[in-house]
Length: 283
Image (tube, rainbow, N blue to C red):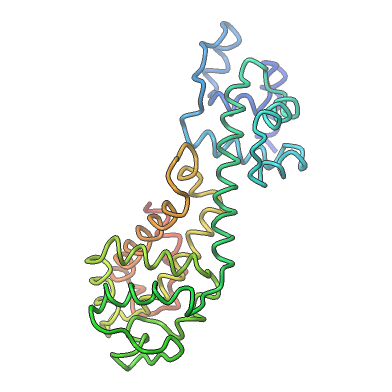
């Protein structure tokens, strides 16, 4: 309530909208100074990801729902949407270049989310994705893989269960192909770290299912994206979105293992969710 009153008073005194102040990253000193003298020209882009994230959050709360839904669709009509945002949020035309840049970055963020979700919806099949399982096994075990993806026994060294699977083709039902590709990327890109993590996961005093943990971490990264905690990895990032996701998954998984094993929560897989936000807080 107090913050709303504060924003109303500042808007009334300065004749500027809250959206514009967020976009220009103005603190109280800047606002007072702007009453006495025009602010210096600003960059053509918004460089601070925190400013972009705050502006995106503000748009989600204050922007006309129809306009925001266009941003969420990952629309490419950036110029038209920028004009609508400026009018709806009462932003001075001289800052149009910042609004346009923000719209581009927000649309990219939601386009990335859409790609992640679409990859999640791809169901795993032996015919189409068996090669990924074989690569994972080859890196981690360096021996002939099990004959079938339909059988898994945790106490059988020649079964997928020794990697922490329950049933390979159905374990990924929550994260689909995204979960499988994230695991495959980590194992192939960071083979030594992955093998060490697998070895640690097998120790009786701090046992955890290696691959099922990876699937959980994939789900966490998706949650963090949807909660707006990883926006900065979409903004001004020309890398392939899925590769960025896989890299984040690898980072969170390997750091989760380290944190889990060094915490009082180890040896209890039901504590995984307790570690989840400790992992992001240390990011």
